[in-house]
Length: 90
Image 1 (cartoon, one colour):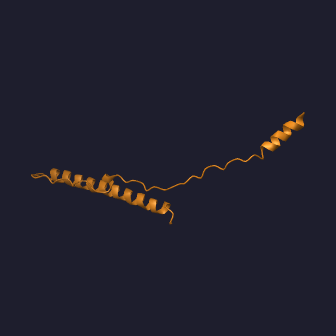
Image 2: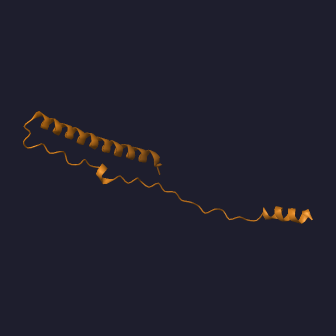
Image 3: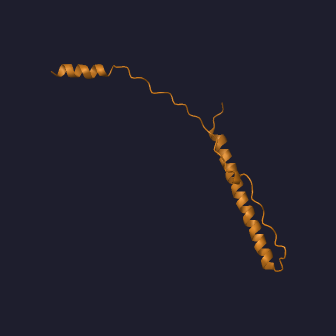
C-alpha cells in the first residue's frame, strides 16, 4: 500500500516547474529637494542699528543663515557622492 504513495511523491518531484519571472532592477537617482540646492536670502541689516546689541543680533542671524546654508550644501554633496558611488558604470 505504501509503494503507490511513494511513487506518486517521487514522480511529483519531476514535474516541470516554470522558472520565476525575471526581475529587472533599475537604480533611480535620489531627488534632492529644491530648497537644499540654494541658500535662502540673507538677513537684512537693520537700517537704524544704534546699539551694539542690534549689530550683535544681526551678526548672529548672519552666522546662523550661513551655517544652515553650509549644512544643506554639505548634505547635497554627500547625497550626490553616495549616488555616484552606488551606481555601477555601464
